[in-house]
Amino acid sequence: MFNPDTILIPVEIDVDEFHWLSTALQFSRRVTADVYILFVNDAQAGYRHPAIDAEELEARVQVHLDPKELQGLSVKFVIAKGDVSDCVKKFCAENNIDMIATGHKHHSRIYGSLFDTTDEGIIDAVEIPVLVIPK
Image 1: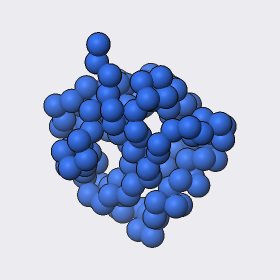
Image 2: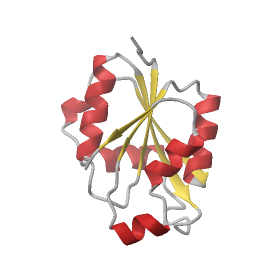
Image 3: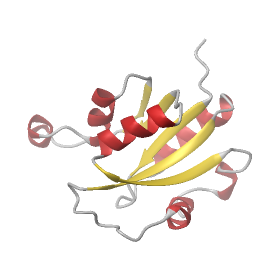
Image 4: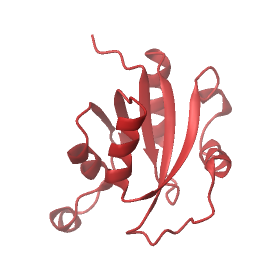
């Protein structure tokens, strides 16, 4: 059975939809994996958060979680800058990430026919398992 040692959870901080993060953390706890929570300050979004650091990312994530959800987990908060898919791919290679857990952001059919969602870009960029947690 596949049992990842390290899981990367990329997050967007401009949304209030963090319910999927709880599921990702529960999964991480079950398999006793170390967790990296990554925010990419994306060029396509205009680098909206130039001053955010790991401490601020942790504070923003914790607002959406029950404090117990992070207890007992080895969690590191990380910031990157650039294209989300490229940064995720690079981070996975440099940190021996075994698996990615991400939330799926549902868009209309018109949007979906024109653009890939962030989770689709990540799936296309990496060659490791990706757990996509639905809305």
